[in-house]
Length: 181
Image (cartoon, rainbow, N blue to C red; front, top):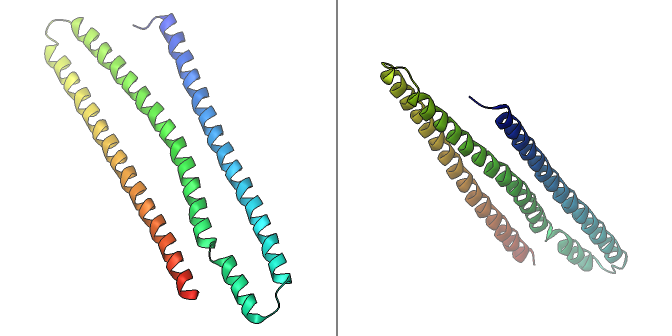
Protein backbone atom coordinates (compact mmCIF):
# COMPACT_ATOMS: atom_id res chain seq x y z
CA UNK A 1 0.00 0.00 0.00
CA UNK A 2 1.08 3.55 -0.66
CA UNK A 3 1.64 5.77 2.32
CA UNK A 4 0.25 9.33 2.50
CA UNK A 5 3.81 10.64 2.16
CA UNK A 6 4.30 8.65 -1.04
CA UNK A 7 1.03 9.99 -2.45
CA UNK A 8 2.00 13.58 -1.60
CA UNK A 9 5.44 13.03 -3.12
CA UNK A 10 3.88 11.61 -6.31
CA UNK A 11 1.48 14.57 -6.55
CA UNK A 12 4.37 17.02 -6.15
CA UNK A 13 6.36 15.22 -8.82
CA UNK A 14 3.36 15.25 -11.19
CA UNK A 15 2.76 18.97 -10.56
CA UNK A 16 6.44 19.67 -11.21
CA UNK A 17 6.27 17.72 -14.46
CA UNK A 18 3.13 19.60 -15.53
CA UNK A 19 4.75 22.95 -14.81
CA UNK A 20 7.88 21.91 -16.69
CA UNK A 21 5.86 20.87 -19.74
CA UNK A 22 3.85 24.10 -19.60
CA UNK A 23 7.10 26.06 -19.55
CA UNK A 24 8.39 24.12 -22.57
CA UNK A 25 5.14 24.77 -24.43
CA UNK A 26 5.42 28.50 -23.76
CA UNK A 27 9.05 28.49 -24.87
CA UNK A 28 7.94 26.94 -28.17
CA UNK A 29 5.21 29.56 -28.60
CA UNK A 30 7.72 32.34 -27.82
CA UNK A 31 10.08 31.00 -30.48
CA UNK A 32 7.25 30.90 -33.02
CA UNK A 33 6.29 34.48 -32.17
CA UNK A 34 9.92 35.61 -32.51
CA UNK A 35 10.15 33.85 -35.87
CA UNK A 36 6.94 35.48 -37.10
CA UNK A 37 8.02 38.95 -35.94
CA UNK A 38 11.40 38.53 -37.67
CA UNK A 39 9.72 37.26 -40.85
CA UNK A 40 7.24 40.16 -40.76
CA UNK A 41 10.01 42.74 -40.34
CA UNK A 42 12.02 41.18 -43.16
CA UNK A 43 8.97 41.16 -45.45
CA UNK A 44 8.26 44.83 -44.74
CA UNK A 45 11.87 45.83 -45.36
CA UNK A 46 12.02 43.82 -48.58
CA UNK A 47 8.72 45.26 -49.79
CA UNK A 48 9.90 48.81 -49.09
CA UNK A 49 13.17 48.14 -50.88
CA UNK A 50 11.30 46.63 -53.81
CA UNK A 51 8.91 49.61 -53.95
CA UNK A 52 11.87 51.99 -54.05
CA UNK A 53 13.45 49.93 -56.82
CA UNK A 54 10.21 50.08 -58.82
CA UNK A 55 10.06 53.86 -58.48
CA UNK A 56 13.49 54.23 -60.06
CA UNK A 57 12.75 52.06 -63.13
CA UNK A 58 13.46 53.68 -66.48
CA UNK A 59 12.65 50.97 -69.04
CA UNK A 60 10.55 47.76 -69.36
CA UNK A 61 13.61 45.47 -69.31
CA UNK A 62 14.64 46.90 -65.95
CA UNK A 63 11.06 46.34 -64.67
CA UNK A 64 11.29 42.64 -65.59
CA UNK A 65 14.70 42.38 -63.96
CA UNK A 66 13.48 43.96 -60.69
CA UNK A 67 10.37 41.75 -60.62
CA UNK A 68 12.42 38.61 -61.25
CA UNK A 69 14.86 39.57 -58.50
CA UNK A 70 11.94 40.01 -56.10
CA UNK A 71 10.13 36.76 -56.81
CA UNK A 72 13.17 34.52 -57.19
CA UNK A 73 13.98 34.08 -53.48
CA UNK A 74 10.34 33.79 -52.29
CA UNK A 75 10.15 30.00 -52.54
CA UNK A 76 13.47 29.66 -50.74
CA UNK A 77 12.30 31.99 -47.97
CA UNK A 78 8.99 30.16 -47.63
CA UNK A 79 10.82 26.84 -47.44
CA UNK A 80 13.21 28.23 -44.85
CA UNK A 81 10.33 29.64 -42.80
CA UNK A 82 8.52 26.30 -42.92
CA UNK A 83 11.70 24.55 -41.85
CA UNK A 84 12.11 26.87 -38.86
CA UNK A 85 8.50 26.27 -37.81
CA UNK A 86 9.04 22.54 -38.15
CA UNK A 87 12.28 22.69 -36.10
CA UNK A 88 10.59 24.62 -33.28
CA UNK A 89 7.56 22.34 -33.11
CA UNK A 90 9.77 19.28 -33.44
CA UNK A 91 12.00 20.35 -30.53
CA UNK A 92 8.97 21.07 -28.35
CA UNK A 93 7.40 17.73 -29.25
CA UNK A 94 10.69 15.98 -28.46
CA UNK A 95 10.65 17.49 -24.96
CA UNK A 96 7.08 16.26 -24.42
CA UNK A 97 7.97 12.81 -25.76
CA UNK A 98 11.05 12.56 -23.55
CA UNK A 99 9.01 13.47 -20.47
CA UNK A 100 6.26 11.02 -21.40
CA UNK A 101 8.78 8.21 -21.91
CA UNK A 102 10.37 8.95 -18.53
CA UNK A 103 6.97 8.92 -16.80
CA UNK A 104 5.99 5.67 -18.52
CA UNK A 105 9.28 4.07 -17.43
CA UNK A 106 8.67 5.23 -13.86
CA UNK A 107 5.13 3.88 -13.92
CA UNK A 108 6.30 0.54 -15.33
CA UNK A 109 8.91 0.27 -12.58
CA UNK A 110 6.33 1.09 -9.92
CA UNK A 111 3.84 -1.42 -11.30
CA UNK A 112 6.53 -4.11 -11.58
CA UNK A 113 7.55 -3.48 -7.97
CA UNK A 114 3.92 -3.62 -6.88
CA UNK A 115 3.36 -6.88 -8.77
CA UNK A 116 6.50 -8.41 -7.23
CA UNK A 117 5.49 -7.32 -3.72
CA UNK A 118 1.94 -8.59 -4.23
CA UNK A 119 3.10 -11.92 -5.62
CA UNK A 120 5.35 -12.47 -2.59
CA UNK A 121 2.39 -11.92 -0.28
CA UNK A 122 -0.14 -13.83 -2.37
CA UNK A 123 -2.01 -16.62 -0.62
CA UNK A 124 -0.98 -20.21 -1.24
CA UNK A 125 -2.52 -21.73 -4.35
CA UNK A 126 -2.67 -18.42 -6.25
CA UNK A 127 0.63 -18.96 -8.09
CA UNK A 128 -1.13 -19.65 -11.41
CA UNK A 129 -3.18 -16.45 -11.17
CA UNK A 130 -0.10 -14.40 -10.24
CA UNK A 131 1.86 -15.95 -13.13
CA UNK A 132 -1.01 -15.17 -15.53
CA UNK A 133 -1.16 -11.57 -14.30
CA UNK A 134 2.62 -11.17 -14.67
CA UNK A 135 2.45 -12.63 -18.16
CA UNK A 136 -0.39 -10.29 -19.16
CA UNK A 137 1.47 -7.29 -17.77
CA UNK A 138 4.64 -8.32 -19.60
CA UNK A 139 2.72 -8.73 -22.87
CA UNK A 140 1.15 -5.30 -22.43
CA UNK A 141 4.52 -3.72 -21.74
CA UNK A 142 6.04 -5.38 -24.82
CA UNK A 143 3.14 -4.20 -26.97
CA UNK A 144 3.55 -0.64 -25.74
CA UNK A 145 7.29 -0.72 -26.45
CA UNK A 146 6.57 -1.96 -29.98
CA UNK A 147 4.15 0.90 -30.56
CA UNK A 148 6.70 3.41 -29.23
CA UNK A 149 9.34 2.03 -31.60
CA UNK A 150 6.93 2.22 -34.55
CA UNK A 151 6.02 5.84 -33.72
CA UNK A 152 9.69 6.77 -33.39
CA UNK A 153 10.47 5.12 -36.74
CA UNK A 154 7.55 6.93 -38.39
CA UNK A 155 8.84 10.23 -37.00
CA UNK A 156 12.31 9.55 -38.37
CA UNK A 157 10.86 8.71 -41.80
CA UNK A 158 8.77 11.90 -41.74
CA UNK A 159 11.85 13.94 -40.82
CA UNK A 160 13.81 12.43 -43.71
CA UNK A 161 10.92 13.11 -46.11
CA UNK A 162 10.68 16.73 -44.99
CA UNK A 163 14.40 17.23 -45.51
CA UNK A 164 14.18 15.67 -48.97
CA UNK A 165 11.19 17.84 -49.89
CA UNK A 166 12.96 20.95 -48.61
CA UNK A 167 16.07 20.26 -50.67
CA UNK A 168 13.95 19.46 -53.74
CA UNK A 169 11.97 22.69 -53.40
CA UNK A 170 15.12 24.77 -53.05
CA UNK A 171 16.76 23.05 -56.03
CA UNK A 172 13.62 23.46 -58.14
CA UNK A 173 13.50 27.16 -57.29
CA UNK A 174 17.15 27.63 -58.20
CA UNK A 175 16.67 25.74 -61.48
CA UNK A 176 13.60 27.81 -62.37
CA UNK A 177 15.44 31.04 -61.55
CA UNK A 178 18.36 30.03 -63.78
CA UNK A 179 15.96 29.31 -66.67
CA UNK A 180 14.35 32.74 -66.29
CA UNK A 181 17.70 34.51 -66.27
